[in-house]
Length: 68
Image (cartoon, rainbow, N blue to C red; front, side):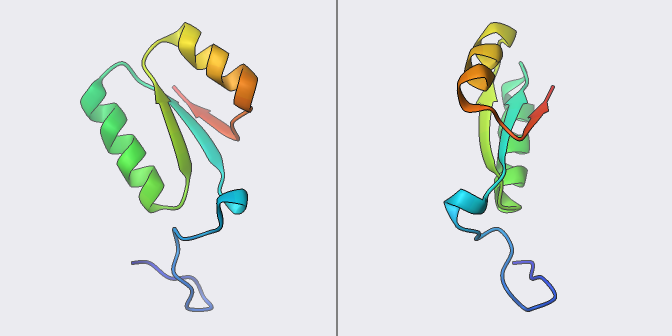
């Protein structure tokens, strides 16, 4: 597990401090891989395959970043 300069483990931040990401990807394998890798880095990741569903989710939760 990666650590920061203070020796603290990365990827284990409290839920309130985690950045919320929305990944919009129609390839299920790529979507899974992105979610897996980003969660390892400590992000809260939500995935959607359709644009309309992504817009609905984003309007309700206001993610910090959207990856298309």
